[in-house]
Image 1: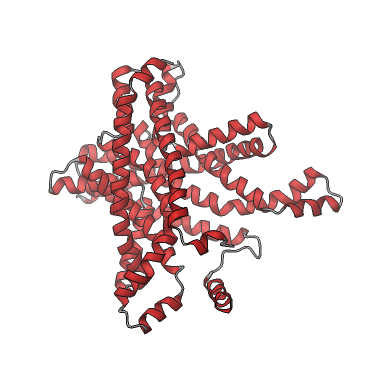
Image 2 (image 1 turned 120 degrees about the vertical axis):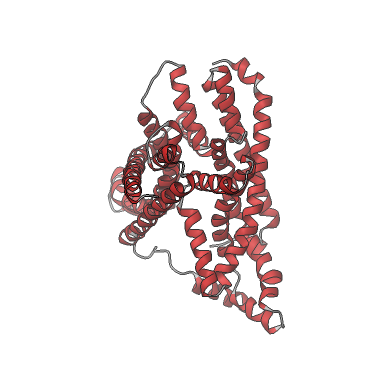
Length: 221
Length: 236
């Protein structure tokens, strides 16, 4: 093993890691927005809306991410010319929305029915009830599950390297081509992924402590 | 699309799908063996073995499967080991699966209360007997639901081995596209096949879970529990 080479290439990998984190954060934001729509549609929507939302969740969770990326990539490119980076973020966002919707839906279900009744008896409309009473609690309930999904996405974002987005995995691939030292390059990438997942797991448990609903974090048995 | 061509594509994709299923089943079986070894190391081993086992699990779960595949596929030839792509795929998928299954198995073993072991020993069973006839039968049944989930995600994650040139469902689609140039339609078709496979296996898993559930531990609708808790809160 050539440790000198591993050390010298670190700056390239850090750049790739930055892209990986950015892609993950952006796609998670997109996925959360979409996921809230899908979750609310599933819980409160009419017959057709909830069917559509259910199908969305089934499809995004039943098809491999790689295939979803290819579909978005080739589907969009027949219409307009878009950058792979945009396609990557979009495809990851669409996929993670399905998983996040399930987490948020569980959060909504855990808000007791009495609160829906109470807020409608106070004169709030259904939309207002959802927006100011239920969702703030539901999202806080959903934080642990959403955090797990974020970590999964951090690793899954490596798949956008196949549509030539230069993130961490792609950097390793390019440097492997240039140096003919695959072991060193991929171990560098793996170390950075490991560092990032470990750090984010730590960070997310802190977020959970700060933002979780206190009553439910003490004893859920 | 011509109808004969469409049929040919379907046949090719079906063959790819069978490879996908086969790879997933193999990695489930071999991963199960890996998981048992890891759990033994973590529960019965000394400090060094324990550290090694938890480090391996941490690395396998903390890095992307794609990076692991590339590392082994491109890395082994560098140290003079040349393996077939299939061998690489099966090794990497099994280790990856094993790491996740070991967490499920460990959780199941630890969830069985210690008083059961004490009870078994006070009834005159040896420690090994207690493990074999009391703990393991329950632990294995508790491991089935998470393992089934893991298997279903492996059906999807095995699509990554297309990147090391294994003709499973995804690469078959790519291959068809290379001479039809109909990327969007072909990938949609592949997606539909994946959806059918995962849905079918989800049903099978649900049936299996119901058959093997330990009576009294089935996951029930928790709504009534929520209502009870609310009542208690109102009283307090």
